Image 1: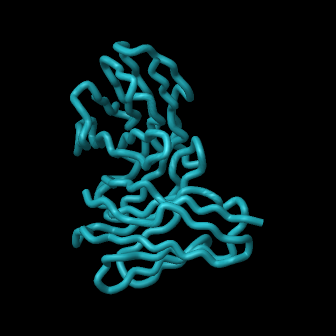
Image 2 (image 1 turned 90 degrees about the vertical axis):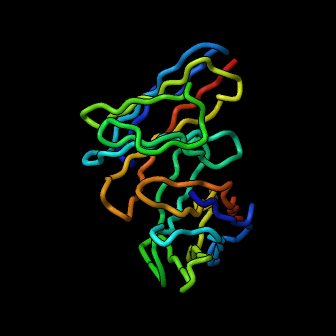
Length: 114
Length: 108
């Protein structure tokens, strides 16, 4: 158990819809990163949030957006869902300012787009 | 962020020592080398991290040569529960690029 929680566990949406995924960081961590993991592949970095602002982004379109709240919890929003968005979405928390930036991952949200 | 290279799969037997090697051809000066373990439908779990030379913890050892272009994760006396995907990463300030990992299968 890492202390990072995500909700919901599973979600089914249809193409074109919007989805919001939620993540609560491990206690004491101020940075949250989001990853997309397609079946059989490694996690792909979407973006990172620190002090409620985006602090780095991977190769994902603007319809992937996020928020970080004052309590360091975070949301991932995906608009205009496409079939290829079906994946396991992982959030990871860490403590900024520490070079040995160990990330602690949550269990993920399994999103299925039909 | 640099992407690492590692074998797609490895097989081992219970009780054996397993060494998984990773290439870090584009590692940056400030990057650390980190290894994660992932079971199906779970998030990756931190195993070990180092900058150079050798690091050991209660579950694994990590060997990093002076040029830092490779790393070797050593798992002593594996058990069936060590069957998982293992990822090596170059990490810096919480940003990481995962490759496709090495699927380790431990047989009885």
